[in-house]
Each structure stands twice: as structure tokens, then as C-alpha cells.
Length: 637
Image (cartoon, rainbow, N blue to C red; front, side, top):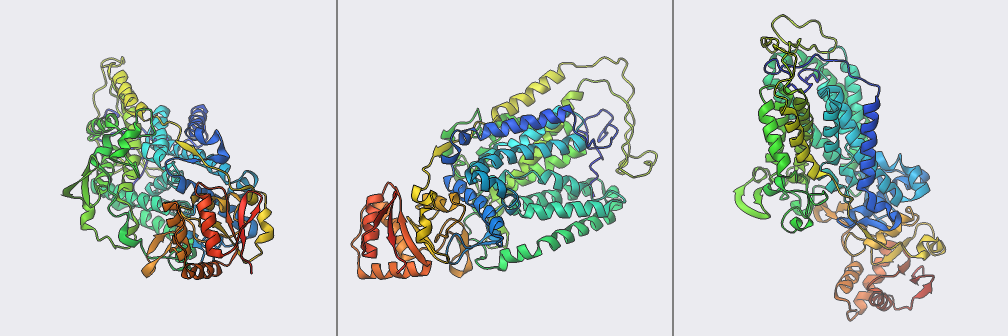
């Protein structure tokens, strides 16, 4: 319904409200500027991941080591599924014997399966670091392509907008262990395809391409796809409200293309989506609606983010410790407000962008307004939304600001384009035409708005108010340069024991049986042992783990419900001493090992190694063997 060629090239050309330069056919072939832009994005992606490459096999995110290890496990899952031709929608290699519903978790199958050969050759650590930097660069590149082909003429404007969209503070923050939230390279393509659905004569093609893009995005990140869909809805409604005549003309074609795309996407993803909600180990919502209260702090909008040259980690002590989705810094917020005010009457795109930015920023504030880390008594928009509403209960309000981030990226490109034309003499601008459309009727633009009278030509061809451009360029630079990212913080983590990495375990674990690491794998106490599975590319199944699965009342919980032995191991680690063991403890341990189908219990190097060895020796009533660099209890009998 929204024609991207209508008022899409900044809208700051002199000629009255919503006047635009003449449209041109999108340039498909990259030129030198495109190559330089993409090269710069790639270098920036490498720079952001630099701390991982220092020692890629033994570095994880120091902000979210749990999620980092989880995604390494996911890359191994993709490699294992391809190598063994197993169903990638489910895995029995974690949480044995129940398994994990991969569609109900952030499995990124659209990435892990194609990258299986890389994981086979170099391991999940290399795949993780390589993909993380590549995803950041790819998102910036596709954003640049859409901006330069459809919204702005200036390649510099497109480069700045693309760089922000790929490396915005909230995106870089998610790069600390959550590559699914930096994998946004399809989203600009999806959005521009939605805006082209109203093109006459192309409804089949546009609908088909949209359906394929949406289907693939479902296997990368469904949450970001949902946010994109909400943003597209707002854009279409805002356009229709401001251009009702054009919207009515395009409505039939738009709906036909949308139906085609939706039908194709549903056809391609119907079974995986059914499996997600109805397959084994599926769940309904999250226990306690844990994310519903995570609203964005008002102070976060004007705060400099930690992982930038202007950021300070100390700020995290009060706000944003878990997620930093905005953190634009006050210069960018101020610039955005000024740019929006200046472009409001002159650019339809700027108006729609402003509406999107403000609406999603307001919607992100959660059930109660927070300011400087303190929850106020003022109700936010989510106070009026039931916490158990399907799908909504899984959403985190603060992440709605990722749409605001996208809007600010577009606004930055429009602002730079507007500055580049500031001070130039006015010129008569012909009305744009939609691709394939006939001549626009006299006295109107192609989108149905009344054409403003052309201004009188300037008396001189010399630029006027030359100071506007350097001042404008300086303002944009001062707003974005403080947000230049620093390399992501990383920390050392030990490799699994040689007993595991060498394959010595194979003689102890026959098919159908489980290797039980101590501590039991989890996202808190058992992070190191979860990596045993990840770094051996799932060659043996392990109990429990780090995932979302069904708990009481089929509500989702993190990890498997603790069994008595797991709980005893974790509490012993916390206290640092072995409790007095009873026959009931030993009976429960034997029962848990039977449930896990254990073949061998293995304890490697650990800060609590001595205590854990004594605990397991007492529980199993047997002395361990020392094999290579681990303690081992053979429980096959």
C-alpha cells in the first residue's frame, strides 16, 4: 500500500510540503561506494568481535557467558542434525531422555544448518565468532542497500543510516551472547517488500518474495519478525491516514500480494510452527510472566551505552544491567527531535518515521514507569495489558524500542540527506510516478496529494546559507561518534577435560546411554559441563541443560525441573561442604541415574572438585577411577 518511491528520497527538496526529487530506478549493481561501505561494515564487525579472536577457543562473553555457551551448543546442534540427518526441530542430546523442542527455543535453524560445514571444520567457537561479526555487518549492508535504493540519494547518508541500524547500541549490546538479536539482515528487505506490495502488476512477484523472506526469518528470530510486522502495520496505517486516496487505489493490489505472501509463508512453516506449540517438550507461556515487567527506563534513552567509546560500565549498577535496548545518548535524542521538527512538514517518510519512533518508545515503558533505576507509581501502557495474553506474555516491553532504533536509523539518513541539500537554490521538481503507473494527473502528485506550487527559481545558482551544511554535518557526527562501538568484553573459560575432547569417553558410553557430567549441566551451576556437549558437537547426550521447556502446568521454565540429585549437587557447591548423606539420598541418586539412562558419571577440574568428589563417592557408595584428567564412576551395572 505504501509506495516506497513516493516521497522517499529524503523529502527535503525545496518545493513545498512532501515535494521530492524525481524518482529513479533502483540501481541493482554495486558500485565503488557500495563496495567501500560493505567493506567498512565487515571491518567494523571484526573489530567488535576482536576480543573473541584473541583466543577464540577459550573466550566467551563476560556479560552473558550462559547465552554465549547456549549458542555455541546451537551451532553444534545444526552440525549434528545435518551430519546424522536427524530432525532439527528436536534434540535428544540435551535434557536426556526427554529432549528439547528446538522450535520452542531460539534455535536459529536458518543459520546453524547452512553453517554446519563451518562447524564441522573449525568448531562451534569459531562459527560463533565468525557469524556474530558477519551478522552485524550483513544487517548494516542490507539496511544500506534499502536506504540507498529507495529512501535517499546520498550514499553517505545511506552509509550512516546503515551503520547505525547494524551497530546501534541496543544491537551491539545483544551481541554479548545473543546473536539471534543481531541477525536482522532480512528485516530491511522484508520491510521494503511490504511497502512495495501496492505496486500495480507485481502482486504475485512481490507477494512470493515476501512469503519466502518471512518464512526464512521464522527460522532465525521470530520475535524480531513480530516486531517488524507491528512496525509495518503502523507504517501502513499512518500512510493510509495521510494519503487516503492513494491508499484506496493500491488497496486491492496490496491485499492480493499480502495474501499471496502470507499463504506461502504459512505453507512453508505450518509444520514447524505446529511443532513449536504442540510438539514434544512444548509449553504455554512462561511461568510467572517473568518478562512482562521489563520496561525501558526513561533515563536509558539519553544514557551512553556501556559498549561504546562514550559509555561507562558503572551506569549498569542502576539501569540496564540485563538489557540495553535504547541507550542512544542525549546528543542523538536531541538531534532526532530537531531533525523531526525540521522535516515534519516537508517529508512524508519523516512523519511516518517519527510516529513509529514515538509510538514504540512509549509502548516499551512497561507496566510502571522507571526513571534512573527507580520504579515510580505512574502506570505504563503494559499495566493495562493482561500478563497472560497469548504471545504477549512472552514479549519483553523494553525490546519494542528496537523498532525505535530502526526508525532513528532512517531518520539519521534523512537528516544527512537534508543537510546535504541545505543552502542550495530552490528548483522546480517534477512530481514522482509510481513504477508502472501512468502520468500523474495535472495538479496532483503521484500519491494523490495536491501538488504545491513550484517556487520561483533562485536569482543566483550560488549556494545560499553555506554555514548550514557544515553545522548540520557536525551535529550528526557529534550525535553518532560517541556511539562508536568498542570490542565486546570477553572472559577466559577452560576447555573441557582431555578425557572428553580426546574421545576417551567413547568406551564408557554405549549407544542409548548418557554421560552425566558433574555438576549437572544448567545455566547457573553447570555452564562449564554444558560446553562439554557443545564442543564435542553432541557426540553424547547429557541430562538437564540450559533451554526453555515445560514445567508445572505446562508453563515454560528455564532448564529441566531439578531432580533430587541435581538439587543436592547444586546446594553442595553453594555451601562448599558435603551434607550428611542418608539412604534416601542414595536411593534418589540411583533413581535419577536410571531416569537419565546414565552410563558413566564424570567429574573434571572444578573449583569445588574435592567437595563434589566426596559427595558423589558418598551418593554412589563407590570410589571413583582416575582416567586421564577426570574422576569417573562407571554406573553401567
